[in-house]
Amino acid sequence: MKKVVLAVLAAVAAGLLAGAGWGWFKVRHTHWDLSMEDFSYFEKQIEEQQKKAEDAAQGKIKAPRVAVDLIEYDFGVMELNEETRTGSHDFTITNKGNETLKLKEKDKSCFCTDFTIANHSVPPGGSTVCTVTWDGHNSGGEFKQTVVISTNDPQTPEFFFNVRGLYTSPIVCSPNHILLNGISAAEPQTRSFHILGLGTDDQGNPFDCQFPEITVSDPDHFEVTVEKGSLDELTDEEKQNKVLSSATSLFNGTLTVKPGLSIGSFQELIRFKTNHPKLPYMELMVEGQVAGSVNISGQKYDKHNTGQLVIGTVSSRDTTVENIRLDINDPLLSANAETVKVVSKRPEWLQVELTFPETDIPLPVKMIPVTITIPAGSPQESYGGPDLTQIGEIVFAIGEGEKIQKVVLPVNFSVGP
Image (cartoon, rainbow, N blue to C red; front, side, top):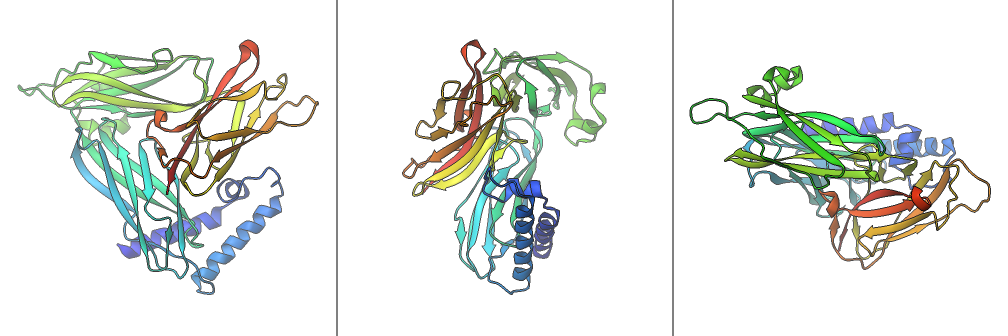
């Protein structure tokens, strides 16, 4: 198993180094700087990283070396209930090199997943633990979550851990997680889903599933309807699923996202009350991003997946500064402190500074750098979810008069010792 894991890590490292292009490198491996527009700069950085990895592999330089015994943990089949809907697993990371190994939480596959590294600096011969936690959201079916860790190991700049399993439940939602990216704030959006009953009653007949109550936290923007359907409506892919293929009843659900959501990321947890004694309620997670005339960019802004500024874990002993940029595609707007401002922050002690372009020339796109500071001495707290109400947040107001639009930026971070 150990040889297999090392081979996988070697392949991951080789793939990352060989396939890195200018754009990928710019986003993932450099401190974001508006002045970095020279293509040769990034080519040179890639060549230097490749050379360093080769020298480390040949033992020509001192370097840390990542080693793990397990990259995926399978929890197997579990009955879904209040005790099993959440879980965690500890993965061990060892430094087999001759320099200090530095680790950092980089990315995760879902809001419902989180992870922490016990020690971010591991001396040669030492080990640390990465704890991966998740919330099943009473959804049933198969689950697989991934977390990504970045390192200073030249041969393995990134690696991952997976947790997976299979929840059995008398009622499941398919899909149990709806992602809506780039939707319009002005037009309604609809998505379909299935609810499947898997159980039988005391006489062996399909259990008569009922949903007497459906709850959404934001009824002004989200609406859900459910109607009885037929098992013939299952897709071929769903019929291949070892859980869904045993369904005894099917319901068709429709999610409607109404106009008026703020630009930026959103998250809604829909709760279905049921009549089943073993599952009094189940949940459907809906999340995504609303597009508009404002774009956000930055080294740690996860535009394509979570729509969050993912800072990770920082020390309360240090001041942490991150930069993003607001690009406003409105030729009629004058970008200044009156038309672009911060209207709310969570937590309040988060510091946000906007820099406005010094020009009287009307530009089609206004590029406004934003500096976000977590000051030294900040409280040791987590703003990492899984719900958006638990994540840090900056809300910008852009425009004048009746044409003001709000842009919501979730800020995912934790403050440690």
